[in-house]
Amino acid sequence: MSIFEGAGVAIVTPFQADGSVNYDKLDELIDFHCNGGTDAIIICGTTGESSTLTEEEHMDCIKFTVERTKGRIPVIAGTGSNCTRTAIDLSKEAVEDGVDGLLLVTPYYNKTTQNGLIAHYKAVAAEAKAPIILYSVASRTGVNIEPATVATLVKEVDNIVGVKEASGNISQISKIMQLTDGNIDLYSGNDDQIVPILSVGGKGVISVLSNVAPQEAHDIVAKFQAGDVKGSRDLQLKALPLVEQLFCEVNPIPVKKALNLMGMEVGGLRMPLSELSAEHTESLKKAMVDFGIKLT
Image (cartoon, rainbow, N blue to C red; front, top):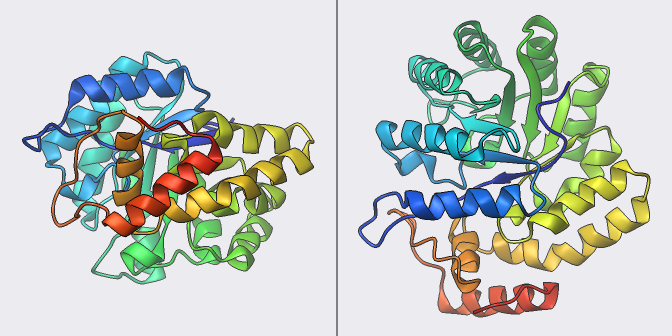
């Protein structure tokens, strides 16, 4: 059984004016998603600015999200690190806090080999007894998980069950499904490729779009799974201009601006991320209005 099917939100981490985590606002966002069609919450991922959270903040956000979600939808914790021991410790603590699964990005900066990736993921999976989703996003980490590596891990490790594929390479993604005989939970890591990934057997998306349009992101997947491929495709194509603007600067700069434009008041960004430029803000506003999102 999959951890989830549908659209899981890669949720932002809201901040106070002084830069501290705004837990009251995080509570509001959790309710917004639990009541708004979102199928799972992915906390402390890239969109949640995990790289600039302290370890204490990181674990506090995970525990808080589990407690406030109250089992309404699954919670998946981003606990990856370029240090295997750190990834193990974060993952074990998240499991103790009650998460439904773990999202483990490839080690970044030190750029390990494929054999190193296998050893890394096996080490984490041996100590963190929860379903694990691999996260392949070479554009940010410098390391691609090759299809054969994914297949080896899924076949040899019981609790490695899925992959979030953000390579953008549909041929690579199709190869993963072929090498695993489809016995893997495949999630799109790119909001502009939800339908193509569903077409090769994907279970859904781990989505930035869901932050601002949770019901629509859910519906893209739900319509496809219900056999309404045209309806799913039409929604995917309608969302493309907004998705493009949500990535007009590095994620999560635009999506935080979008939420603030909606009156969600999620605060700013932690350095070295900077505020969205004025030019891109106007383009984002237009895309949001065209998609039907109300601005304050």
